[in-house]
Image (cartoon, rainbow, N blue to C red):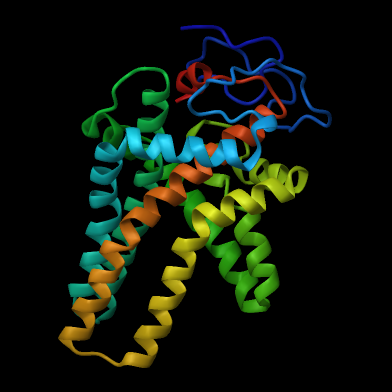
Length: 275
C-alpha cells in the first residue's frame, strides 16, 4: 500500500496501519499548494474549471457505462419497478421504501468504487462493485436517510431552505464512500467554501434527476391512475431516470474529489487506497 502524500488530510485507509492526523475531519482554512496531475482521469484541476469537470464526467461515464448501467439496473431500476407493481398497502409500501433506500445507498458505494478502480487502471467488476456497496451499506443508508430528512424538513419549511440543504448535502455520499470523517460536515464545509463551483456542478449533474422526480410526481397527482398510466410513468422513470441516476452519482463524485483536491493533495491512487 502506498503512503499518503505529505499534508494529506482527507483520505486515509481505515486499515489501522496509519494514524489519522490531528484535524483529519477539518477542511483546511487555506488552499494547499500542491501539484496535481492534470491528466488524472478523476480529479479535475481547479484551473480546468467547469469545462474540465464536464469532460471528466463524460469520459468516466463513457469508459464505465457497462458496470454503471448494471449497477443502475440493480440499484435504481429494480426498486423503481417494485414500487410501481406492489399493492398500495402499508406493509408492501414500507417494504418497497426500505428496499429503495438500501439499494440507493448500495448504488452510491458500488458506482464510486467502480469509477475509482477504473481511474487507477483496474478494470471494475459488477460483483466487486456490489460487494463493496453492500459492505458499506449500513453507514451509507443512514447518511442517505439523514440527508433526505434534512432536505425534506427544509422543503416543508420553505422551498429556499430545502434547496440550500439539497446543495449543502449533495456531497455527503461520496465523502462517506471515501471514508472522510464527518461526511455531513465535510459536505457542508466544501459547499460553503466553494459555493459557486458546487452549485454549478451539482446543478448540472443532479438537477435533471431532481426535475424528473418532481415532474413525475406532478404528472402522477394530475393523471389519476390506471394500468396504462402506471406503465407509462414506469417507462419514463426507467428510460430517462437510469441515465440521470448515473450522471448524478458520477457528477457528485467528480465534484467532491475536485473540491477536496483544492484543500489537500490527493490522487486517484490515494482515493482507491481509502476505499
